[in-house]
Amino acid sequence: MSRYDSNPFEEEEVNPFADQGGRGKSGRSNYGGSGFFTTNPGSVPPTNSRLSPLPPEPYDRGATIDIPLDNAKDLLAKEKELQAREAELKKREQELKRKEDAISRAGIVIEEKNWPPFFPIIHHDIPNEIPVHLQKIQYVAFTTYLGLIGCLLWNVIAVTTCWLNGDGVTIWLLSIIYFISGVPGGYVMWYRPLYRAMRTDSALKFGWFFLSYVFHIAFVTFATIAPPIIFKGNSLTGILPAIAHLTENVLVGIFYFIGFVFFSLESLLSIWVLQHVYMYFRGSGKAAEMKREATRRAMMSAF
Image (cartoon, rainbow, N blue to C red; front, side):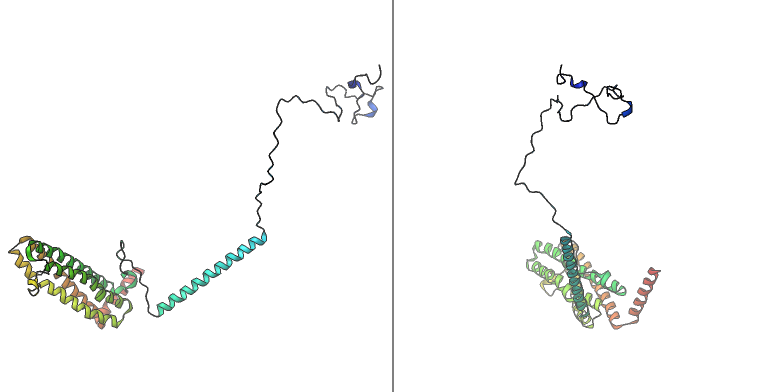
């Protein structure tokens, strides 16, 4: 048998790590007891796997890959842009503050409508804008303005009952005129001037208040009595028409008598307000006492 027909597994196996001195005559390694053997490195061992090969991955030549393009220069440019915007905002803020200070020095006050809270139509902030020693007078003055609204509203109701009992529609129309002219007129003519006079201590505004408030007191005093001058006084709920209606129609007489009570209270409170505002304006001892009392209360609350 030739050497090509011999079994390949019987070829001499050379172990480079074996001790050269320990070889026998046959040239075999001393580690021949192992069950492992080496094969030809160039040969490919057969595979027995039953798994199918993976399909090739699709390749799209038109696909785009998102690669972040922000580098150090872009970040630096954005930072500079933000700094420029911040500087511009600060400049605008300083300019706005300068204008507000100029308006304040000129005596111009920006009034924001905040009353009544559910439907703001006027500016009203006594605790923050009126001095402490004048807040009581201002609150009572505001009460007289609200009282005027209540008196004129009740006057419309009472005169409506009188009209429905056959006294004519003219008195009802007059009561409506009293209401729609008295409510805004009272605010514009005397309450707002008093509010601004208390806030700025303006003699001109005080003078306008005195002139208008005297007319207000004259009207509510006239309504309290309601003399039979205009349509027998039935367009106002005073004491004289109340007595006259009590003998004719008890319900109408009661409504007029309630109106008389409202106008009486309004007259008394209005006289009180006029007296105390005049005392403050003239700088009497009472005004100085009120200032000292307010200062004392502020110091006690601070301690």
